[in-house]
Amino acid sequence: MKHMGPIIKRELLGYFRSPVAYVFIVIFLISTAGTTWYLGNFYTSDEASLESFFFFHPWLYLFLIPAVGMRLWAEDRRTGTVEILLTLPHEITLAGPVKVRCLGRIKRAESDEPGRIGMVAQIERYEFLRGDEHAA
Image 1 (cartoon, rainbow, N blue to C red):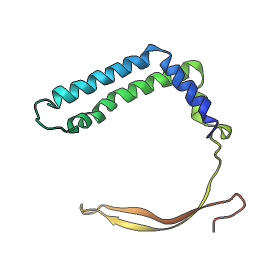
Image 2: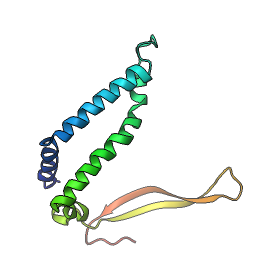
Image 3: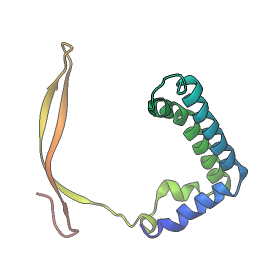
């Protein structure tokens, strides 16, 4: 995980070196204030509640997060660094194949609708195995 620090630092610094990040911050603050005070009727509700503030957040994130993500993906494609992020080599993630021994059950799940049946896997206990152990 310690090798991820330079990558995270490079991405954040690259993002905040351009005015795009600050434009998105301003758009977020203005849209949050507008939805809270005007659409959420914060002033006219006679109630000290932040319900109207948090009610509109998922809708704002629905538009702002993909826009930020598209910009970052386009920048990675342009610079040629997207391959590093897509492949996630072992040296960066410090992860390898993981062996796990699980104890669980498969259950039949019936729906309220007639004719619809599903299967559910319920894991009751698990343990990570070392490289020389075998799952039995």
